[in-house]
Image 1 (cartoon, rainbow, N blue to C red):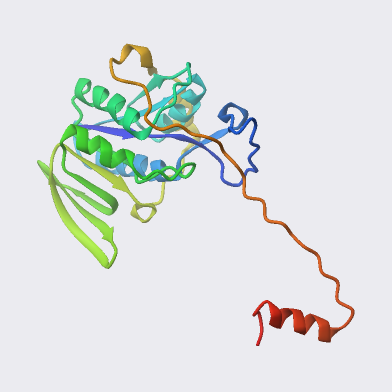
Image 2 (cartoon, rainbow, N blue to C red):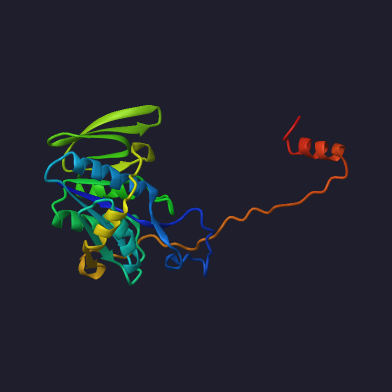
Amino acid sequence: MNILVPIKGVIDPNINLVVENNNINYNNYNLIINPFDEIALEASMQLKENKKNCKVISITCSNLNSKEILQKSLAFGIDESILINNDENIELSPLIISKLLKNIVEKKNIDLIIMGKQQINEDNHQLGQMLAGILNWPQAICVSNIVLKKDKIIVTKEIDFGLENLSLELPALITVDLRLNEPRFISLSNIIKSKKKNIEIINIKDINIDKISKLKKIKYSINEKEKKKIKFINIKELFEKLKEFNIIK
């Protein structure tokens, strides 16, 4: 069984971003694995540990700076990693990425795709659904439990009014929620072992698809809330202002 885990390097949400020329230069920041993708990596490893002849492959579409992200995924115990090298910084919409991944899925004979339900940097929440659509595979999104059977996968997914149980015939695609698991601690020995594993690099130009995005990012901006200081002479003024803001009645 071959499992593919698409991952993404994202900027740590605790870091203050700097917008330059209406854009964010990702090369200026240390990237972490998208937290939802870490859940997918852990889920794939749990399946691998409970099933014989199971291979897990991680993949990302980015520039060479993302090799470090793939190296971290290998430290989870992932068997192989693939980097679709986008050193030309082509604008990659979710639809383009899904077409790139489809090419790899077909070449690597993938049986199951496990991926985070969204990326914390842009929150598109589109890639999984698009990829399943162009592959014509059954899909389940926002999965919070996984049970693998012989030729199918049983999942629990979250819906507006509760939980839904689904049975998907393989090959299939699932996107995972944070409630699914707790990513494992990566040991020093696994980090050392990961350094010896190769990362397959595929140039994005060698994948024959339409790479012209129908979407264009106009600009990035940071919300800056204005803080106003108000000085009160006495308690009465303070209470009047709190009533004005409907903080107290």
